Structures are given as C-alpha cells and as structure tokens.
Length: 262
Image (cartoon, rainbow, N blue to C red; front, side, top):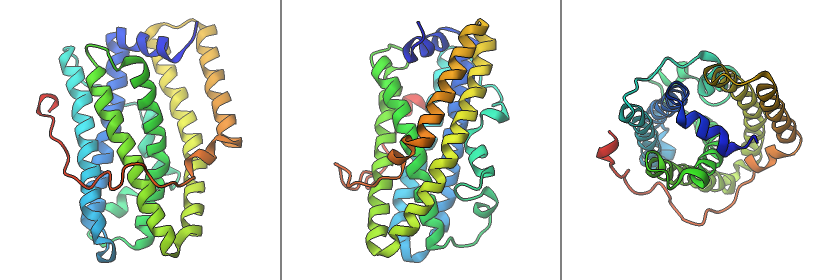
C-alpha cells in the first residue's frame, strides 16, 4: 500500500536514498540561510526593525542545513551533489519568484517593494515547508535517529510562517494590501508548478535508487499530478491568506544554539 509514511520509511531505510534526501534538504536550507543573511544586510532603513528577525530566520535555515548534514554524518554518509532538476530554490528563482541572487550579491540597499516580495515569497514557501515538516513529525517524531531533528525543524518552520503572516499583515495595514495579495498569488501559482516538477524529479531519482517497479512509479507520478491539479484550481488559496499568528513576534528572540548538530 502506498502512503506517505511507507515512502518516507523506504527512504530512511536505504542509505543512498537517505543520502540524496538529506543532501537536497541541506542544500535548500543553506541557500535559504545565505539569502536571508544578504537580505538582512541590505534591508532599507525604513524597515530596519526587520533586520534582526531576518537574521534570525537565516540563522535557523543555516542550522537546519547543519542538522541534515549531521544526520548524514551520524550514518557515516557524505552529502552528494544535488541534481539541478531537484533544486527547488533555484528553479523558483528562474521563474522570477523572490529576489534574484544577482540582486542580493550587489551592495545596494533593497527597496520596500523588494522586502514585500521577499516576505510574500517566504509566506508561500514557508507554508510548504511547514506542511512537509508537520507530515514528517506526525510519523517520525518518536524515531530514535531523526525524531528530535524533525520536531526542532518543524517548530522553526511554523515560527517562520507565523513571522511572514505577522509582517505582511503589518504592511497590509500600512496600505500595501493589494500589492501583497498580487505578489503572493503570483508566487503561489509558480511555486505549485515548481513543486510538482521537483517532486517528480525527486521521485524519479528515488525510484531508481530503490528499484521501484514501473506500476509503483507511475502511481506516484499520477498522485503528484493530481495534487498539482487540485492546488492549481483550489489549494493555492491556503498560500495567500493572512491571519494573525497565535504567538506574536515568533522571531523576536535570538536563535537557540544546538551544538550537538553543528
């Protein structure tokens, strides 16, 4: 029987599949850490109060990258190069979503519109990250090898999502609501397609590593396409709604060091 739990368990039980999964995750988190660090350094003076929170966001992403690499090291595995077709962050950038790396490499202050773009892009991608980590937490929170890491990263991703809600609501109240909604919708529709493409690519690689029979691989691909169709028609709306988070100022405190994962 195909289920999210059985698929993750297959990956967890196979060294090469686990190696690829953790390598992809570590690479994406590390890219996110770099992006947030650059945005914090270039934030406009008018939004300078955001800089410490963006720094905290980046520090969390860097920490997650170290955690995934530490999980590999614990099993005596080394990271592998991430196949370009599975690079979620760079594929989003090629779609024109978020702030381009070429822009972030320049020593030039960002604009308020840039920060709105960053927050709207983060609102969409953190929704995905939060959902994925909650799924892993549901099945593997008590796992002796990955349980603690899963719970820690899931908690952080929930905080990142709450932070995006809070800051976008603040900007919306300042008169930028329509602009924010337009950017979020563009980001959501692009992310849905990129997520489908990356999911298909990852499942293709996993299928070859785990020697899945053709009917199983075909069923998984069909499921990914079905999810994409639903999200394209209806599901994107969950990525563009804004609501006041239960816990206020979720990134207002310094990042908690986790030396055992460093």
